[in-house]
Length: 243
Image 1 (cartoon, rainbow, N blue to C red):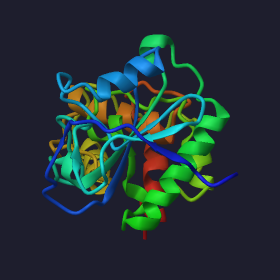
Image 2 (tube, helix red, strand yellow):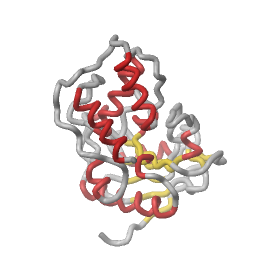
Image 3 (cartoon, helix red, strand yellow):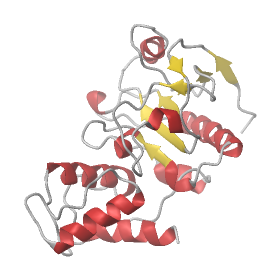
Image 4 (cartoon, rainbow, N blue to C red):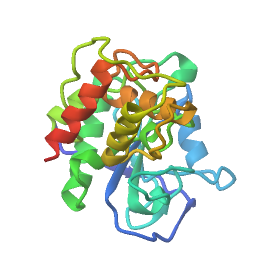
């Protein structure tokens, strides 16, 4: 692939950082028109922005300098930190997302995204397991970049943390309204990976949302918020790979 070209498209929507950069956060725009999405991120009335925007045609725009705090994460949490905007570099990927029926990401767009991510990771100390989707840090509230996002291709290029999902099996399934020690273990393991979840022993709606977010990123074949054996084993594999 040729050297990545980044074009400047400044957005006024940014502020001062209050922490080190240690997260790379990926989004989809959720809008069918790329130019409208880009214009919205540069509109002072929107009060939203990202550091970079990757067009469907593979063009890459920088909207906010990396040393500044862009406004892309909103209400979010990861590993006990709630000001994700201060800790992250945000990339908006032009894609209609769930509102448009989850269209595929074009190959040349993903190639450009990978090249961009690699340049960012070369400049900052961001561990592989802190390359995240918006849905990871805002379960239930956000769904992007979606279950069709090619995390496996990014990981193969050295961007992000991923393991082969465990085969589908019923296992000892945990679901909404379950409670007890096994739910506590599941919640504790999700929290250990970084998800914002309390260890209560009650499989409540918040736990269901976190499980669905985990599946959307790491076991996308079935995203239902039910912690089947495949989901639980995939989580254990991810944590073991961090050792």
